[in-house]
Structures are given as C-alpha cells and as structure tokens.
Length: 231
Image 1: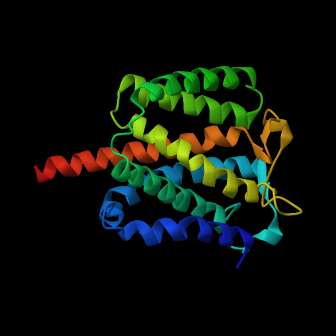
Image 2: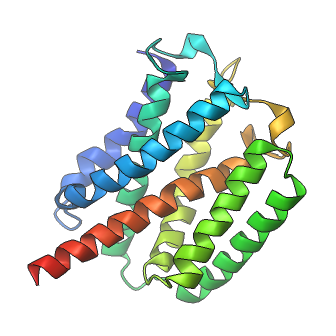
C-alpha cells in the first residue's frame, strides 16, 4: 500500500469507527453527507485535474499506488471524499458534545477577516494561480453563505474548522514532505505566494476552507430538506 493510502487510512479510520457512537449517531447522517461530498468532490477533482495538467502542483510517483484517473492518482481523488467525511464528523461531534459553543460573535469577525484576507491576497497575487483561486473562492463562498444567506450553522462550522486545523497540519505536513525525503504532493513556487506553515503552503488553509464550507452547506441543506419532508 502506498504512503498516500496509509495517510488516507489514518485520516478516515477513527472518524469511521466512531461514526456509530451512541451520542452522535453519525452513520444516520450518511444519506445527507454522501451526496454533499460527491458534488463538491467532482468540482475539486476537475479543478485538481486542470492544475495538475498545468504543472501548478503534482505528485511523487514512489509514494503512490500507480492507479490514475486522468492525471490524478486514485489517492488524490479519495482525498476529496475521506477528508470531508472526517471534518464533517468533527463538526457533528462538536455540536453533540459542546452544544453551547456556537462561536456566533467570534465567527462574525472570522468571516470578515477571512473574506478581506481572501480578497486582498487574491488581488495581490492575481498572477499566482493557486493563491488567487483558493483565496478568492474562499472569500466569495463566505460572502454568499454567511453574509447573503446568513446561515445559522456558520459558527459551528468555524469551531470545527479551527479544531480540524490540528489534524490538517499533521496530514498536510506529511503530504508536503515534512517527514519524507520528497513531498508526496509538490507545488510549483511560481503559482503560490511562497509563505509556508512548516512545509505546507499557506494557501492550503484557504483551499481546505473552500472545500469544506460547501460540503457542510449542502449537507445542512439536505438535512433541513429531510426534516421538512418528515414534518
């Protein structure tokens, strides 16, 4: 099994096994979660395919299984399903065990800072494809979901996103070469701003944010829709 597969297995094993926890009952939400993950995964696989073709990032063959979908290794495609699963699991666990923590006030300022930072960085680094796309999409998603639609769950999302930064640093740190002679995933320096968190491009924070926010958005919409039908 490839190193990338082992990383994915470590990412999903805990959340999957704990999905049957009596308090969270996460497995009962799969019917809402899986469609949300699939829709966003398709969009990100298309994005990833183009950026891989253009040499904005790529993969080191010796850490891969050798199975490809287009220019993307199978592991990379699975990343867009398994990582959102683990993060939405964190989201639901925090809601179940810390129902009083909504971060409503903090999340408002977080949304402002994230939006402004995304717009400014996207404009300054408009010629760096990864920086511009990740930052601008994050900002636009926040404007639409938080400021326009004013969703009530955004504070819970921010709470989960901040908690998920810890496993994010571990997983992305391994993928970007923090513990290996060569990175599993490499980035072309001509297309990012060059700021790193250890070995992780700072843009990855925006990239993960704009992957997870629409997953939670569609997931919550499907749950609300299901509740209306039952009512």
